Amino acid sequence: MDGFLLVETALEELPPLEAPDSCGAVVEFRGRVRNHNAGRPVRALHYSAYPGLARTEGTRILTEARERFSLDAARAAHRIGELEIGDTVLLVQAASSRREESFAACRWIVDQIKTRVPIWKKEHYTDGSSAWLMPPPGDGKDP
Amino acid sequence: MRIRVLYFAQLQEEARRGEESIETDAATPRDVWTELRARYNFSLGTHQVLPAVDEEFRDWDHPLRPGSALAFLPLPGGG
Image (cartoon, rainbow over all chains, first blue to last red; front, side, top):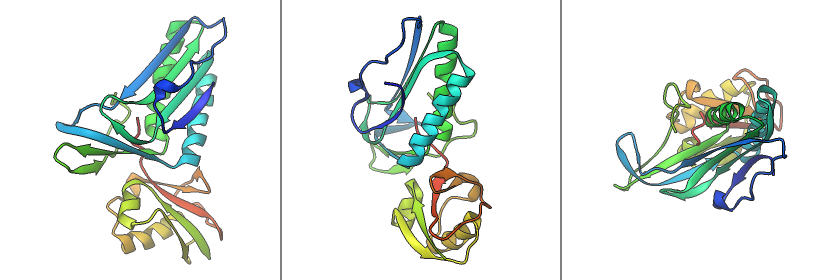
């Protein structure tokens, strides 16, 4: 399976990335829900999206990645809905014949998704409060 | 003309709705935003919001047409 997915279930349930035999390096990024942000203890996260445009823009990013890098396969999947600490929220996989290309493509795709795909997260803190997160200056530098 | 307006994330909470149909003389997303920001007291400014028309990112001065679906999107914060 190739392409960009918005997923409401655990990303661990996705089938493996299919890559041709010419592929020698698959680089995978898994973004996880962490238990803290900006010094505040986090209890859970809620992710919402503009589904139609998120799929369009995510697919566009993967198409651009194939033009910029020599990829054999690429896939990205983003969770939406309620997530708990430790859940995988973003999965990006880039496959090519050599590792330099796969590492560079994977990183580029992650950075692009975080700044371009209309997905938002609301943090729920252990003290019962919550807040929508806006990208910080120099966004895309977060894990 | 009548258009559909969609709200997301904190804008959805502040407007207390995900979408609505409005009658407006506004010609662009900027004009609609000015109207609705005053109505709902949105906490974000135009530098923190991206407009989309019919599921495509557009600039603030993109011409609207009757029946357009105009979405106001806070800057993405996923991942």
